Amino acid sequence: MSEIETTKVAIIGSGPAGWTAAIYAARANMAPIIFEGLQPGGQLTITTEVENYPGFPEGVQGPDLMLQFKAQAMRFDTTCYSENITKVDFSSRPFKIWSESREVQAETIIIATGATAKYLGLPGEEQYYNKGISACATCDGFFFRGKDVIVIGGGDSAVEEATFLTRFCNEVTLVHRRDELRASKIMAKRALEHESLKIRWNSSVTGYRGDENGVVCAVVFKDTVTGEEEEVAVQGVFMGIGHKPNTEIFDGILEMDEAGYLVTKANNTYTNVDGVFACGDVQDTVYRQAITASGTGCMAAIDAERWLEAQES
Ligand code: NAP
Image: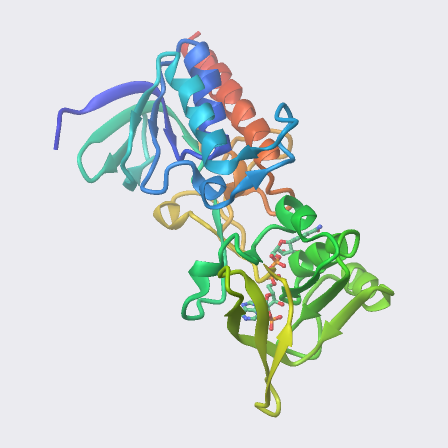
């Protein structure tokens, strides 16, 4: 362990929320220390083309966008460690956080640890990420214009993604492992009554088939009642089976909802511990976009700065 470092604000996580918080905090002379974790840049680093981030009329590669965020924060007084935070103590100020190699004591904390989309976990699935498999219809739907796609899941996310995709795709099929949707009544009704959305009940995906370019060209469905298998040609597979917020280290320390998302106060980024703020997907069950994560990252930095100023006056 190196010497204990101190800072006005420590930021945990380095997606659009974390880096935006760093840019704002650095420009407010808070000299932030950011822990970018072992998957620096968050979910955007596993996407390719991003076409909906304003300011990039030609689109931008997800990893490049995150490098630009980082460069902008590092231009000011930001310290970045490529380490994961493994333990926190928010019981008194200064707050204490630990990575494998250091302890940092911070007057305020901004949590931007994000959420991870769930995938089926089938063998060989990863090779099709961005090659036919996506976990974000809003981000990638446009690339599947005129194609036949499936959306896996029966909750609000799956229904929302499937409905959205009907605007672009030739055929959209919602694939659900049971015979009843989990989605809220209003969303379920919308899906059931949608004239161009098909639903494949009692069905799970058990395998993918790739074409000569390694891009998904078919999936294998298994009937969850009869066990029968069938291979069907599709060009796109969207995961709508939920996200997992990255909040394990805050268990029992910060207030969370049933699914483990951090609870923030309405209209700001305050958590239930004064001086600890949360932004981005770790506290967002609704929008989950890079631009909304950035927006809340900006809010968190401003909240932290003003909160600290109020303590010091
Ligand atoms: P969710 O409600 O947990 O639904 C996940 C769905 O995926 C379920 O239908 C589940 O099937 C299915 N699933 C899970 N694991 C699977 C697997 N391994 N194989 C096949 N299917 C699997 O997640 P969500 O839809 O992301 O919603 C999360 C929260 O965000 C909810 O509270 C939701 O209301 C909210 N949300 C709101 C909106 C909105 O209001 N516009 C939009 C999106 C999400 P089972 O049903 O069989 O368990």
